[in-house]
Image (cartoon, rainbow, N blue to C red; front, side, top):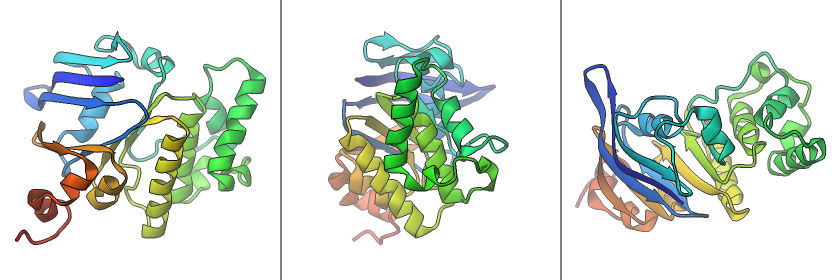
Length: 237
């Protein structure tokens, strides 16, 4: 469904990505792990059309995305939930959700999609007229994901959805990710919380210094000595 081949991204004289290749199969959860500065967010931003690609190929459902603008990529069904939520703080919850579905001109379908979002995030239904900026961190993350779901994505790319959230909220976020996948949406998850991410991942990649250095199933990487030592905080035997 989605494939990156030999992806290179440069910021000035800095090579941020150095030949990244990975595959995401349909209706799977695929996780990209790595420390701060490894290149995870750059990868997802390049795929979304936010930062330019120096070389390599990004394909989604047969389409080459390299030179497509971000809004065209979104219309294909590949939708990005950015790091730090990036909700519209001065708009209400309702207005944020409507913005997520701005490509949908069918009012009835838009309403039905919003009801689906409320079935996943009931708290949003009770805060429709509340400004996004007044929500808690966890509620803002729910709104960011809900806004993305309003565009009815086929592949949802999530950048650090657990960042800065309390442990109970983090557990809820990962439960929701599994629920979204169960409804047929493919998930590409960029995360630092290796333990939680690997437990729900069908497949996972580990990135260091702009390169993929490990890959395997979530279970395999949970049991990998290198992953245990550097990403799970366990002492290697």
